[in-house]
Structures are given as C-alpha cells and as structure tokens.
Length: 247
Image 1 (tube, one colour):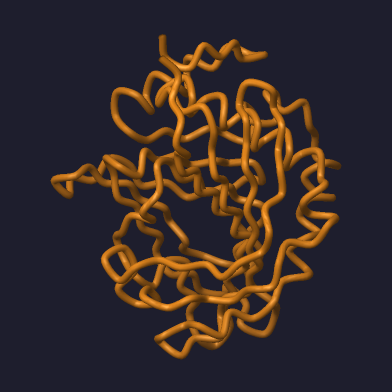
Image 2 (cartoon, rainbow, N blue to C red):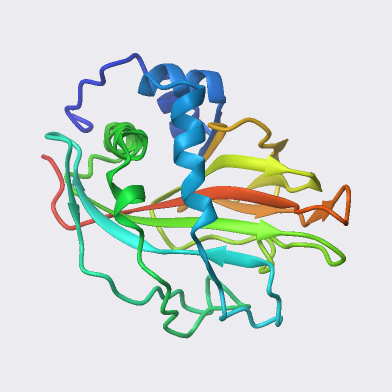
C-alpha cells in the first residue's frame, strides 16, 4: 500500500495533482497552515539568506548567485532527520549543460539554518507527501538556499534553461522577492507542453515537481530600481529515493 503514511493534515489537494499531473503549486497560506507557522517564522527563516557565499562555478561568468549546500537522510515514518557529512555537489551534463560535469564545493549549511523548526517541519511533511506517492522508505534530501541578485545586469535563477535536476522530486520554495520583476517559474511535461507559469510572490509559495515526469525553468530577474539592492531568495529542495521500498 503506497507509503502507509498518515499525514497530520489532509494533503489530498497536494498528493492528487502531483500523482496525476506531476506538478503542483502549494500557496503560501496553505503551507503556513500545514506547518503551523506565521509571518514571524518566515522572517526569521529568511535571515539565513543574508549569510550565503558567492557561487564561483558559474560557467557563464555570472556573479549573480549566492548559495550554500547540505544533505539530510529522512525517515518519513518517524520524522527522523539525520544530517549527512558535507560533500561536493555534482550534476552530470546530461541534466545541467551549463554547470554540470564538475564537483562543486559550496559552503555548508549554517547550524542556525539546519536547526530552524520551520525547515525541519517542511522537510518531514514533504517526505511524507512524497512517500504517499512513491512508496519510498528513506529519502536523501539535498538543500540549496540560493539568492539571485540583479542590478545593472539581469540575474538568472535557472541559466541552464528548461531542465530536470536528476532527482525523484524537486521543490522551489520562495523565501523573499525584493525590488525585482521577472522570475516566473514554468513547468513542462515530457513532450515539452507547458503545464504552468506562475510567479512565486509570497514567502512560502512552493512549487513541486515529479522530476521523473516533468521539466522546470525560471525566467531571469531584473531590478526595478537599479540603484537599490534587488534579489530573489529561494530554497531548492531535492528528494532522491534511497534503496529500500515498502512492500
């Protein structure tokens, strides 16, 4: 029986479209209700994006991306999250034509970020949603807090264009938008048909994808006032099924 997971809140509105279509938008209000968090929690969580490091692996020479990286193992049945040893992040060129094919060594997640109750609640809830669909008993969770900046030049949230991440499920959680236009997120089916284009605009807006069945892309951002800071802060979540499935 798929997953054998009993969710604290009814998640059929998330599970059904992910199962049927392969993607779903969870509005910020819905996610906040599920996690039991409010504006103060989102503001606290967002402060972690002030402590990211420049991504020096951009093959296009861009200096518009700052990030960190970390991994957890998740047991969706018990909710146990285990931080894994830090290691380089790698995507093969098959998935990332721009920056793939190399080991990228990013600074690890800060302890404050890793311990944030909002994050931990989100990771467990998503793992249970995905297990209900996929029957996976254990998940490898890769976390990418990313800030894309803009000024005189545009910033590119997804410079590789339409792509897959090479995972089982992926999520893009908006944390903050400031002084920007653009940054529309799109999803596509395997034939290239557009399924959705949406601007993640509120902290907590979460776009989920079955990475085995869909592709995703994000348009560039531009500063509204080029004399002021401008950024788009997101948490990219990668869930990969680990060996061991329920009967």
